[in-house]
Length: 356
Image 1 (tube, rainbow, N blue to C red):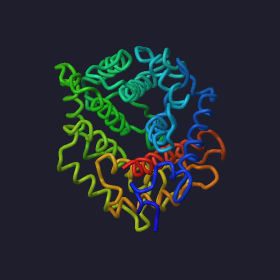
Image 2 (cartoon, helix red, strand yellow):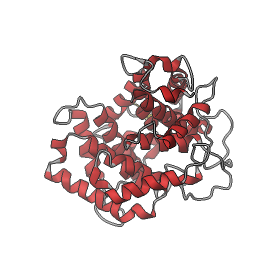
Image 3 (cartoon, one colour):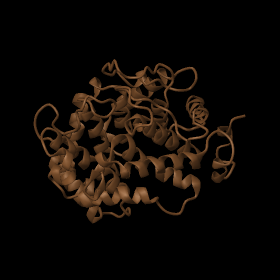
Image 4 (spheres, rainbow, N blue to C red):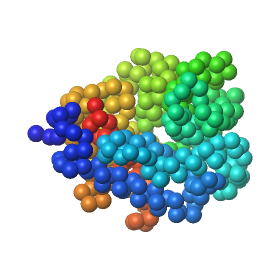
């Protein structure tokens, strides 16, 4: 009988000692990758390092859940460092001040958009939970709304990296970024969201979702589904149910999901072939399903979690996932980006299941 059958019976600390997966080894992998990221020259930014979609943002989503599972008393130095960097840059409105690598357009505007969205999310999550935003989160949201697009087909969204790199930096990734912004707005105190100017900005964001939702790959709509748990008006109930039904239809017999199931994607002929169930796809989907309150005891989600348990690398602690774009040199920083994201979402899904 699998460990998932015993949810709620054994102490959480048993997780790192027996059965299905090793939470401490997963945490060690993710921490080590942050250490590498801090030393990587292209990642340098004001206040420390930039916050990447694949390695930094997923780390800040997953590491607090692992901390709870492992009984750790305080955030890691890497969590603290990433947040300190976001605070140091929260009021900056020039891309060259954020990161010298993005001084020229269109990358300058794109860089600022990405930075503003992630800063609003993670500074709000780090807030003390009062009725008003703390000073850093307030600066983050002020910048977020100041950079929201007010005209054109993308009005309501934010500039976002378009580097021909899946899954986070394609033309339609702007929708993914807007959904992250919705998650941030939903996490802000209710009194803040009641402010007329904020209500107007959220209304523009929801209008963008309504216009663009049907044309988006499942990957981007998953983030909107997640955001709707905090900002319900971002996704009508019928669309919410339809997205969840689509997720279940695409589940493989082994319990996982393929990377293709998150598409459709642009073809990248030089990318490694991935046709079987995929750690990134399965970890992300399982995390979102838990966020929308699907019970881990649901047989379909239980199969997905069991798939994740069985696919952790027993020595390195990670979940393998290859680039969707090209073949990178083995062991290089870029070759591990999707592994970082897969490991974070797999660990998040399994940690949240054990926490129920």
